[in-house]
Length: 469
Picture 1 (cartoon, one colour):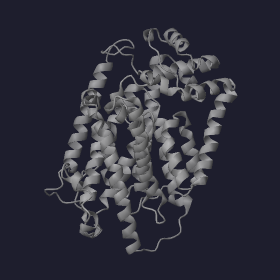
Picture 2 (cartoon, one colour):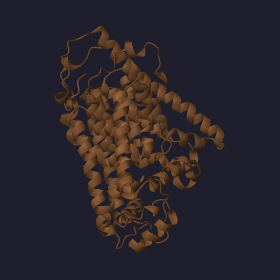
Picture 3 (cartoon, helix red, strand yellow):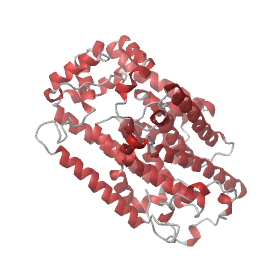
Picture 4 (cartoon, helix red, strand yellow):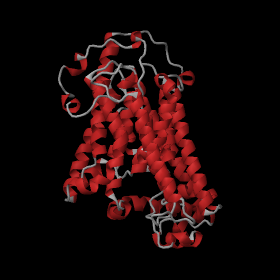
């Protein structure tokens, strides 16, 4: 999310380009990729900066117009089936059914796929014949119980509105914390609206906006030095446990015990809601379902090209299950090691870099992650863009900005992997993580060579303060 505007020269850090380029580590990136989208936000246009504000605005406008106009046209039909014959809201039917079960206290049916299909057909006749694999913990059904009191069409509309409000609220508060992006607020929200991940979130009627809310709260708690509260936000991801896996490993390796304690308490309390409502049996069935998830992956991921993680990246390339699993484990360890290195340094790098690395690792390491879950990267787009504006133009910063742009756009090309068997967005995310790691190294070196006096942080005051370079 970036734009181009000349700023006063004295605001630009005077950094020697050789500081980033002396080992040639990024020659392979910059030789193949165009220059940084984010650097165009503040640097004069030259041969190396092609993604200006005007172009980004044009790209975002075209993307928004194409995605949403086609979607609205597809939905503009009488009844609950769209022009392609699919049920409007797709996955929301599953949550609507879970809410119906919660209203009638039918905890025994929460993990019976056939029984849920029958319930869905009774509540929504147009959904006859549609089945979903039950993988969510019991407390999720309680959340959707109020929606199940409404007709399906009204419940879906309310959920769309709720998801959009959470998503844009997260973007708004993150933007407030990024002073260098504030004057480009209109462009930031244009790109947020055109974000392919947000489009899929709405089209699928999924719950990933709640996960984004947890991640955004965790970021602000970390900024305010509220580690225990950050852990409470992390534990809220227990309804999608695969999204908390990477953070748990990173914070365990970095010895962040307050965060881990808060996460454990939050996860325990959230699952406890389901136990109090249904009893312990549904929770046991959910745990058993997770333990046997490997056996039902074909049902869970009927369209692998819509998934984004290292596990599915390798499984699409390597037809042998054991080998692809081994490559997934090895690459996940490597990605985690890079992120842990960013968080364990004695002199920590900027939180914008560390947290963006954590979000990218969350996506890559998750055993199961679908395109709508990429909304979790919204904070990374905003934080990295704000950080890039403050930096001098180097190969590293240009590569970082370009990769940020590619991570944003490449999910549009996901369907091509049906034939290429290569998910390009995963490669872009891995490369972006590497550039963040290198950038964090340089940020620490610059901080140690040019120390400045910093007042002791005040958590309450600092949680929502503007990011500093």
